[in-house]
Image 1: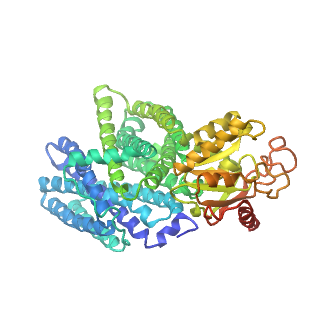
Image 2: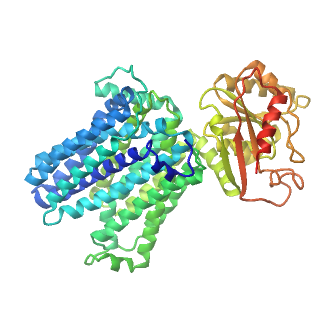
Image 3: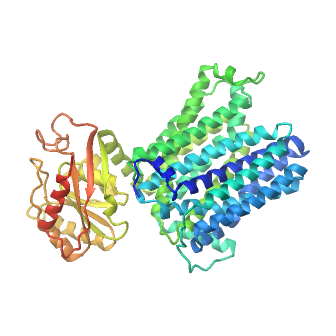
Length: 622
């Protein structure tokens, strides 16, 4: 199941067919939708009204049918359901093709609505199926590829739809194109491996209002998941604002023609794709929540600069691409849009992966459905705000962009205040990414759920942070009270639920309180990390393991997972070459390894046996 990088997934049957199916779906949606918008604008007497009506009709099914789609995705095999949906797409596109060839507007509008229904039912599947086919370490890469492919497909479909419909025989070209894309999507879906029902006994609630409320309750059931959904929805609102207002920005501010609009749309889409693909490398193939604040900071910085980069409003004749690009300020605009896209990818991909990983398999599709409902609502809200600000309050597009850049601040603060884990992971990610290159090996041996005691050798003051940043599950680690009280470390440790401990002879009450908290965490099915040596190694070797872990296992018998940290000896945070953190920093960007051994039953876990296992894992380091 492992891979060298995310692109290796494109060689596998468990991912490539789904990727191609989603790519064809996003392409066809936008090819048909944009061609129809241009067609109505050019041919219908009330074209502007029909365009806005169609935009609403395409979104409406996400509100009406997402909950039903989520239920069906739980009850049925997702691969089989995908093939049925793709067969329906061929029929829907046949209606659309007839509508284009016969110039029948009501048929085209009906086909657009049905394509919205089609996408609504496919939505919960494409994200709920990923954790069934991918391992936890592949989830970030898989989501990154899906998001990259989706944005590129949207871009290509939007451009081709607008260009092809304007040709002399445009309706015929579009009719052929949408049928071919639908057929290719069905062909790709036939190779998606089985994804068995996760809740086969689920009773479908056909009452859309009650079912929607039920999906929302499921989404709110896990706080971190719901906050992830709120974060994703904000990104959809932000992205919809940029994509919707870019054409007006180009014509009214940059003085560009259609070619410049296409260039900036492509810049933004390629930026999101690039950021999505970089997530796996930056996160070390784990679900790294620290990228979310990093992405939010980038969205804020580049969003602000996009406002200040805007030249004076254009009042002359519209210019071609070459002429527009001759203005140096336009390149700053391009850089800002690319930066917004890249950091948007950093922001949203870990949120998608977190939503998938922290949702129970039997409710995952319904939670994704709730996410789709909120996403659709935020996109409609973005359109409404655009109309209010631009048409009624007479704002300029740069002012709208500035407002949304500023809104990143309260949105980020709200999410990070309610769930400080994001900010804590960001600080840990900064430390581990700027100082070290971390290799993670066999960490899937750490249980995906349930309680476990992790034991590791103790090399430096950042051992716990390195391990916490390498594991996708939150870890409660035991640490010296003196270190716990350090200013920046204290914030990270408090948010991480760390357990300060002091020697029994110095603070007996704190000592007993630490063991009580360890037992409470384990009873709550948490992971707890201890360093049985009791102190940092002074010479790089692994000291004797103290018997305190036996007390933990007597009070709360749980599996014990041995870990080994390799490569930290000699760092600034270790005692090599002098007292830790009181010498010149050394071995920056050093290569480290965190490796896990087989979980041991509590009855067999002794200080001596665990010492041998950790020593063996440590000795394998090259």
